[in-house]
Length: 342
Image (cartoon, rainbow, N blue to C red):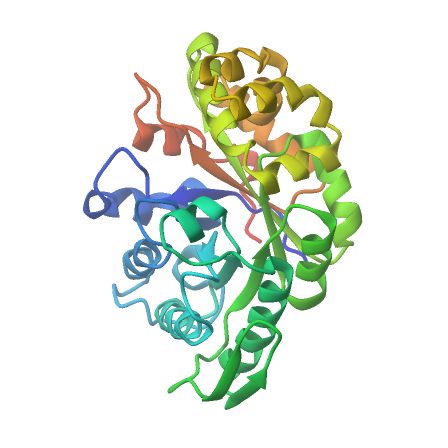
């Protein structure tokens, strides 16, 4: 069953210590947020911020009251995403079981293959056969989190006799990071949701068409809540050049039809001319992929994703001079008339 009227935020905020975010996280349900999803690149890991959020948003401070999504104001917690190469299958299951125990009925384990920079350059692990690894990991996790003793000789790993002790009740939902049709179809077939990012509202129908009507679509949306359009576009160009030159993201935008528009940027980037690569990204491209402007306008833009078929927008606040991130979380909360619980 697909959810309705969800509105998420990315944790932790990058501009303040994690230990100082308790009051803001506690206030999220009252502000109208239904979800908090972690991000994992080269800062906080995917699980620790959510373990704290589970404590901070439980009724008694223990994170163990209740077993349904209405507990603690219904704040759902999800990883977006936990890396399936840098963590082995059993470790992923153990981490997921721990979070599911802290936030019963309101944790989603989002997993993904990440990128060559994270997997190979930073962790010294070959990023090999990503589709097969994702498929095998989903199969293992579904069984392990249900409490089975798992032995399996999969294409990308072999498991001999692993069992969680104890298995979480209920087991967490699973979601898969997916950009192109193959991974989106895999997410729809073997998990409960597909997680994507770096897309415009106009791109959502293409992803939905592959995912089908019953798969939850979750997307991280980059939001720079400043009225200084020049500043926002400058920041957006740097982000686009860093992300959309990665092969998986480049292929994603080829599929979405933006390949020719990004070709000058890619050629300059490949030649080592970073300045020319940034200059090749026009304002229209930035405005399509990075939401910016006054908070009210940003909320309207995020709502466009929902109108196009996205189930769960997850706002990622883009730091900028003059932007108070904590205040931005409050200002970007859904409008009062749209704050219906899922």
